[in-house]
Length: 107
Image 1 (cartoon, rainbow, N blue to C red):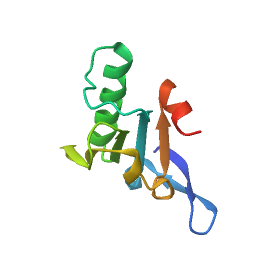
Image 2: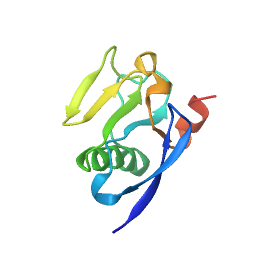
Image 3: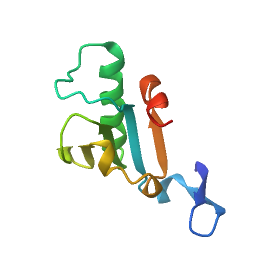
Image 4: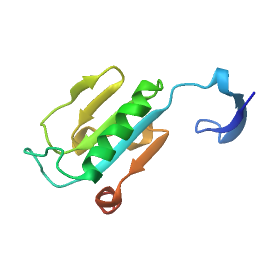
């Protein structure tokens, strides 16, 4: 059985959980902060970005794609939605996954 360490943000402790007991994580995938209403998948990086988010959602995690394309949240699939930066509550995420442009967007 595979185990992993999980960090509990409420009491600042690590616990060990088995693969079968793994809980659902809240994940933010950040690509760019720039306003991009006409964004479409035209590059390999963009395709990889969306496919990774979709794969995480299929594995049972709650995934938000943080991208300034729409004015409000848009549900894309089960456990997958797209939200603008103004709706992101960073303290509610267990993981913030950035892609190259997204790294500079968080500064």
